[in-house]
Length: 335
Figure (cartoon, helix red, strand yellow):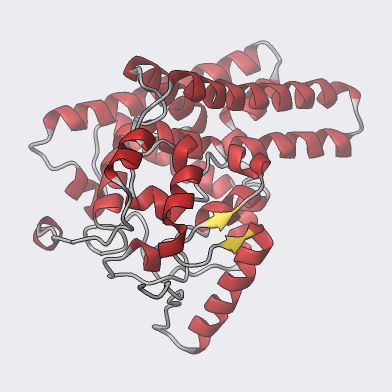
């Protein structure tokens, strides 16, 4: 604990942006926030509705495929949750809090725990032990990937165990204890209370679905975060994997990916991840414009999921041969 309490001071390099441009890009917009937040929830309602309809009427293979598609879309809920925790989606903070709570509940996420961890991740990105949200090197196996891509009962069991533990007021890991020390009584109370709400709320859904003979309610809401997450995993995992830790330059420890507009919508523009880390107060819907302002000072971004993972797989293979190897992207030459 004493080691974790000794916080580092990191002087981060950020690509220069004119002050007037940054002030403009930092502006929140309720309409744009609503279009994304409500639009994404509407997409989940449509995918869930189609899967529900198909469950009793379509061939079982078709029904399972549609349920899987719903889970694949639902997996991107975490990216909306992430943005709402940053409180940059809406100008009106009441809207931000409302949608954050909705997204938190639907994804079984504890926004209190996540935000405490994620603030450390931004402040000390890939500098352990002050950032333990993402630790390099990452080891990926086909088996671990398939658990996200198909059905993830272990993930459900671990999430449920964590929610029950916090509901009873128990702090577990060293990282959790560092984020919520005994003196942080209000933060601990909020952490425990949200876990209790998750447990009671999803427990009510389970009881209602069984009592009314509606198992699809359980499948499409409470269990949705635990199947079909393979595609979202490929995008989220690409944010830092294979890059350098313990450097003070986001261009070296974070990856930007160019995606088509549909994937950008699903991913809440988190493909502009260097830009997000450099200027975390910029709302996600302004990151593409920020990218244009700083791209001359940042590495060449990878293109698409396939192009990105070609690079990552090559890095992981080399790390298998050369433990300690970290990929260093080519930076633009200073003019």
